[in-house]
Length: 222
Image 1: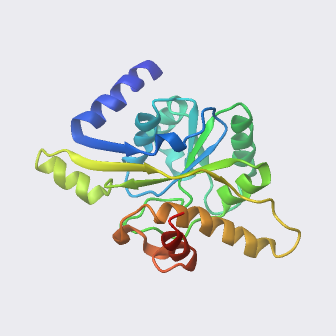
Image 2 (image 1 turned 45 degrees about the horizontal axis):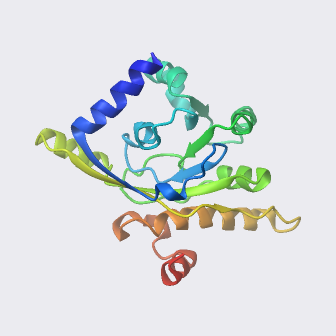
């Protein structure tokens, strides 16, 4: 079945989209790193398998989708991990750490859900916590053009949707200090999100549009 999906996903995406990737030189050669992305539409999940052409990756998705038979089936074949977004999910965290130690790549949207208003929401701290604790390398990736509204509108007009995937420079978060851990965790989360936001159009930056850290990155060209 995986063989069939490896053919099907690129075939469908090539039929309905024109994808322009850039920044592949920023991806580490080996697995065991994090790709942190923004989440604009339902097309973002298959986009990971198309862009990397590498199935040695896994993607956390909201636990609510586990109740859907189709998503349960996809979860088995697309390496999805169902995660409780509303409380610490220790079982899911242990599974993520195990897979990373095996050399798999974690693809995650820190927002936790897609942006129905087409703008970035505040990031959740889970990935920042794990990345800092475990010393994982993070590659920020901006997805541009996958808004559901645009995709559906283009499908109705029999047009392909133009999508950009932009990978930024990788970085590693420092270990947590003993004091002010919650404040530092929020700062680490904002750093991940602002590194993604700087590669997005202004219209999609949402919660981070006026963030001081984003302005610092934009001014420095980081």
